[in-house]
Length: 262
View 1 (cartoon, helix red, strand yellow):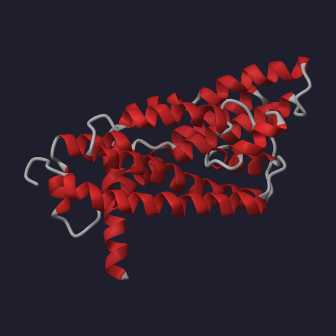
View 2 (cartoon, rainbow, N blue to C red):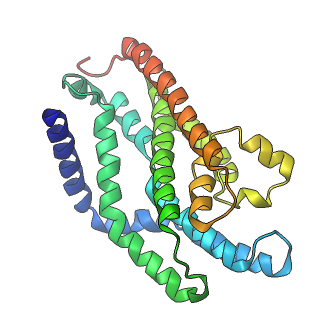
View 3 (spheres, rainbow, N blue to C red):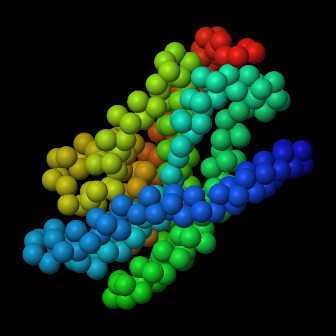
């Protein structure tokens, strides 16, 4: 167990140091996830002239929560893995007594830690611009939000990593992610909270993994009505499903891998 923790800590420290080297790029990465802040302005204005069941303050708080979830769950593993396979760099990773996927996990966690100061800065700026939206979530809400956020990151990562494994058969596995992202954009709650969707559509969407990537953790933080039991069970269920599919594709893909030095 000590050896496992030592390896994990070493990977995290290495990738954190690597990410800190690109502090200027980190600022751009954080800003690239500010779409919810833009949409917040749209929906707060729309709420003043329409009946959506949410006030302008509710929308402001919700999209701030969406921004936080996005900072926790942004994933890019498919582009890194695609490059490793196409350039034959995966061969060196396969020689190590460690699943290559853990390198990508450590890379994402190190980047999360490195972007925290910039995220906090934008949150502070938000409250300066919208002081009326300031609220203090309960300890329970914060704990459940963090738990849901971690699970959402795990689900987002395993989904994209599963898509990445198609690189063993096609050179453009990232095209699958681009297609998937269209559904993710509209059905996850990034564009609008699911509470403003027509009830039949909302019911159908809840049977997909999308709401549990953004809407569910964001709803917990701002106090929107969410089914906690269903949300957590559904998230874990989708993680297990994609993890099973991921391992199956990994075993099949290695048989097709013919990268440089393989």
